[in-house]
Every structure is written in structure tokens, then in C-alpha cells.
Length: 306
Image (cartoon, rainbow, N blue to C red):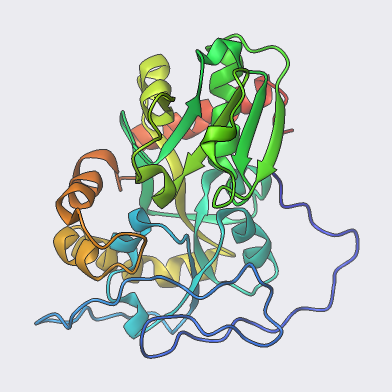
């Protein structure tokens, strides 16, 4: 799953239109289907609003609960767009987004993009929201179904299967996980689920393998699924303080984030607050960089990226 630039530059597409006052992004008539109406949380008005200092920018947000603390109150100044993970690199390079919470593989495939080192979406052990479902032990798997919107998690699954479960020949097929029932899995197949879908209880009888837990078991390093990226250095420098301020406020407001998130649940708020507090790490420091470098090295070792 790569973002391969075209051989000749295309005429730049119009930029996405700003989010409406309700907090949902409005789809421009000529905007690609991948830039969808956003489920970005709309927070109640805080007593002391965040003072954003950068000019208003177009910001891409993955449509999952775990991204919401990083963009707390940001829609009051910036334009937020819900974008599938595998589209982030393309839209950044085209200039249709200024900044995005992009899969870490986006950086590997697009070295010119600038990481803004104020926050990431990662884990230091079980992550819950990135998992494989299978009928048998993973060493018996030779067919992997992945979320068609995934990028980093798909490659992580392949590394784990090849490196630590000894899978030699692996066929990978993209599917719409909203339409693919795990009950269809044959004994030699596994299904990757990411994001909100993976937080729902798995069907009885299936083996659940948490990829965050497996990564940490074998490497003892944090795993970075996504990080803030800007399309150039000047934008990264201008937006840095806004991203940091939003993160610092959002990490104090997990209860509010869960209550206002327009996701797939109407109950079990404590369960999902605990997920944000205990399973997701928002740090991006030296240890996270070590984990990122290790992942890139393993991807190259197994010829999954150049």
C-alpha cells in the first residue's frame, strides 16, 4: 500500500472545503470520495479556550477514536477532514492537506514530508485496536485479509507473520472490513482489523492476536502507528505549538472525548476511556523513534518496502 507519485505532475485539485460549524467536514463537489464527512469530536466549550497561533490550516485526521484527543478544540480554528490512513500521503503531497495524523509508513515512502515531533498514536504493549482474527495459530496462515484503508497496520501484520511466526508464502488481499464477516475465515486465513472496528468484541471461537502486544513482546520497543506530518518545514514549524496545545488539553479530557465522539457506540464509555488511557500512547520521543527505525528496518529486510 504505497503512495506512488505520478510520472508527470497533474493539475492540482481544489482543496477540501472547511468543516461546518457542527464539526463535520463538508464534502466539496469535486473532492475525492476518500475525503469523507468527519466524525471529529465536537467538544463542549472549555472555560479557557485554547489560543491557537498558526494561520488556519487544512488538517487530515484518521477517522478513529484514538485520534480525537490530538485534535481537541482544533476545529474552532483549523479545518479538519476525516481521511482514510492510506490517502494521507497523497493529499499531503498534492497540497490538499497542510498537516495530517498520517501512518508512519507514509514517512518511509515520502521522506520529504516533515514529522512534527509533538505527538504520535502508538502503543507500548497491547493496543486493542489493531488485531488479527484467525481460526488457527498464525504459523498456519497463508492468506491475510487487510482493511482496504489500512497501511501501517497491514505492513506490521505482514512483518509479524513473516518474522516471528515463520510464514513463508503469504497472500495479502484488501477487503472492505465493514462487509467482510470474520465467520467466512477458512482455517488458513486471517483477518486484520484496525481502529474502532477492532474494539468490538470478536466473534466466539476465533483467536485474537493483538499486534501491539506481539510487537512489544519481540522488540521491547514502542510501536508508532501514526504521527503528525506536515508537507514542508515551514508549515511544521508554524503549526507545532497548536498541535502541542491541542494534545495537552485533549489528554486531560478523555472522558469528554469519549462522550462527544460520534463513533459506533452508544454505550460502554468507561471501556473506551480506559482504552485511551491505558492502551494508546501519545508520546513521540527517543524510544518511539527507536521503534520506528526498527520497523522500517524489518520492512526492508522482508522486501515490503524499498
